[in-house]
Figure 1 (tube, rainbow, N blue to C red):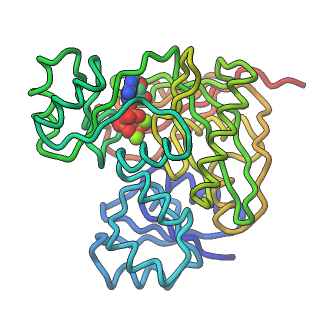
Figure 2: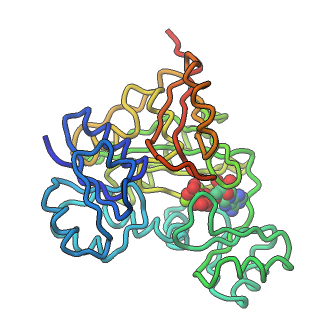
Length: 351
Ligand code: ATP
Ligand code: MG
Ligand code: MG
């Protein structure tokens, strides 16, 4: 079978590798860090930095297609890889989603709604942006933020200097604070031939900036559900996207607002492992290898809960629950805030 190259060796790369192997493919992981979780299940691992031109070339030559599990791949590395093998999803998806400002501009150009936003590089920009958008607001670094890192809340103008100091000089974006009733995400896939399949939207609950729980079905009207899926499809088509994408949305009385997009399999899509015949990981592998997509149908209600840091102490207990599927990432070191695994509680399997 074909070899799939995956940039990044975390839990997402690990679960992609498992799915790939079920379809008869093997994977080659490229990861700068030692002992990556994906390395335990992949056929091959290259431990090298994204500035190692020789290692990147050698990696590309062993694989048939290149995909990735995180969006912050340096452009210089992609420049090396792109002429050698197809990169799926394509570079446009990476470029748009690596920078919150580019991302929001792309989304609003598509006619989709986001929080009001403005670019902030210094105290003058911030004062102007606050004038325009008003408080409360959130200042975020444009690049490299995840799990709520690189964000500062501004409740009133007095918070501005501290918020700016928190950005440590990084180019930033001010977003108006959205008063949402809840958050959802659509895990959507687009195949090589342009066909699209979406999983049922999940409802996401965050704690301390980190995803805690995803519940399907989400609380949505039929019209909202339709809206969510159609706007995800619009995004994928606009990017000529191939693969799985996570689209995070705020549900407000005025409709759905796009929070951010992730050009990869997504934590809020882990429920699909036990709620669908074909999960997001297999769906992504199908897309990037040119296979037909599965339809994304859900066969049960599921609550996915992340196991973060010391939550690992609950594993023996969770292992005794009959309707609970455990997914552990094989990370040896437990750290506060570190995602160690997740559980999918299957609530109802209708017959
Ligand atoms: P992820 O781990 O999902 O990539 P992230 O660090 O990129 O997270 P965001 O998704 O931008 O951060 O924000 C994290 C959470 O903070 C959101 O899910 C939401 O709960 C809250 N949040 C972010 N932006 C806003 C906003 N403009 N208004 C209200 N709440 C917000
Ligand atoms: Mg994010
Ligand atoms: Mg997010």
